[in-house]
Length: 108
Length: 108
Image (cartoon, rainbow over all chains, first blue to last red; front, top):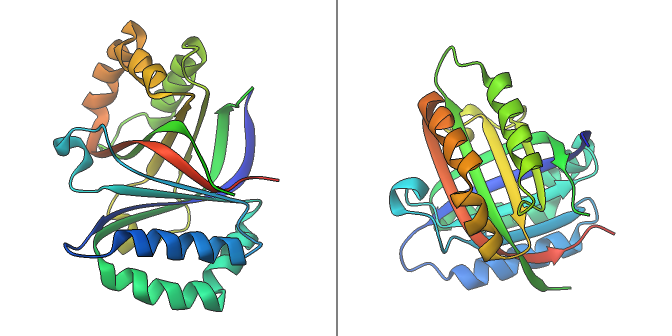
């Protein structure tokens, strides 16, 4: 099974020391719940990878959109723009990747 | 809606110059199709993010497992161990994050 499809917005983050990470993840959960263009959202904090392999990054945020245009709508949404300011101030390092996803093996 | 659930293995990669990336992604697709412990697998190549935000990383690989034990089974699977040797030789930079996923917004 090989399907081309959804558009993904993947972010990995290292937060600054002393940042209230819980508030930020709650803020992000609120944000995506307010914006219909976001199809799905999940996140997690690394518990397993070796330090040398995660390079200081601790959190991953994975958003899924039906199409690239929905991602664009999310990015320019005023709530997102506002949240980004808060979020940017809290991070020490970040990598973003945005891409059409190739689904090779789908959940049964 | 807030559900705790699947275990994720999230990898972002910058390949060395001249590497046959297509062969590697095909190899990875073959690998996950052979190992039942992998529930789903998707990947992509960034087309959108600004250079400064992706920090040289180009590809994201996301594997989903029903539980952490399935991830452990995947990691120690001989086919994975063999593939990792080939894969490691081709990469210039890599970040791995392994985490139980918090699903905030689920696909309808």
